Length: 440
Ligand code: CAA
Image (tube, rainbow, N blue to C red):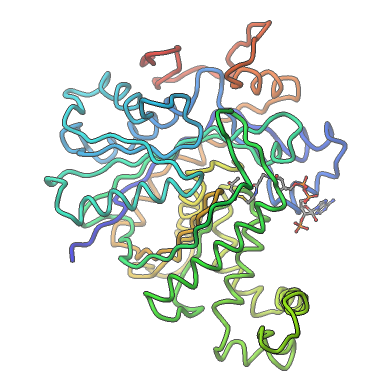
């Protein structure tokens, strides 16, 4: 079977930042450590007044196309994954293609365009669609452009407000990829849930605590489903495990769950048995409640073991670097977790070519998807080409009053009674100028 996967990525952050411990926490009367240690976040990225999901996506895509020397004729498919779409009919990919056509010779008339929606897992679903399109031989030697773009804003005062973020990830899906090859195996955990919804509304209605439980349940099911096709997975199978990261604290919980699942019935479980006992088996308990209590106690003990700590520090913690700095990017989130991990690998010894990532995507509503990716020869050059550190360093640091203004600007239905000036100057990039977006 042809190797198909992600050939290149580009990341585009919103150009503003909100400092959670120093600007957000004091306004909320909270201990800053709730954000830095509890949620695991330092800053959120926000779009300036001239940025939106189209401009961020188009700017990421343009940098990708320029870096890879691509013209529109090389792209046969453009899919956008987003849960921030402003148009219920026309896909965001058409707006982005319209931007790109202003700066390239040729157009995307020949390209199939669409929009993928299933909350945050849609970014991975769009990558899967592109993979299937290429493997089916329908691509006529063209690559697919997948763009995950979101302004992940919550209503002011919502508990989710601390986890906001804005940014886009553009990915080129192609044969013989430079970055990672995708596995044919996938595992799913999917169920109709009402933990996080946006029925005809811009900001989500969220049952925050329940959404965390749903995330963990669907992730466990996806792991089981993945193993039903891949066979039992082992701790040392994966160099990194990037998870969907609404905030790093969520991934701490998901990683512990995954670790317990993976060590079950293995020598790792045996090795820990003297210190913390064996994992509770449901059949050993009178009822579900007693079993769940026993699981909680086992997990609490597992979390404190050196073995778990060492695995977490090596395989999961490095996936959280960008997320801590930018917040939740919804559809782009798991893709910046992958990029964070590979940035970490740049500084480690070893080639990493041929090593595997366990990629765990999730979308509320709810669906988890697990697949594996194998690092390719060109991974190092692809990751070294990212300019995300420069973008993050250049962000404008919002005061509280400015943050309130920016939030108002990006609230679609808000009747603004004042003019809000931009905070940064556009620099040869696509900017939002109203309907029928134009290149600056
Ligand atoms: N020092 C250290 N830690 C502290 C602290 C302090 N002073 N104060 C609080 N904490 C810890 C808490 O103990 C908690 O950690 P644990 O869960 O490990 O106990 C953490 O900080 C957060 O504190 P709270 O639970 O009190 O925070 P909250 O109730 O204000 O909000 C939230 C948390 C419910 C997740 C909220 O941010 C939210 O609704 N977020 C949006 C929904 C979301 O992201 N859900 C995640 C799963 S769904 C998903 O993944 C899809 C998606 O992208 C949205």
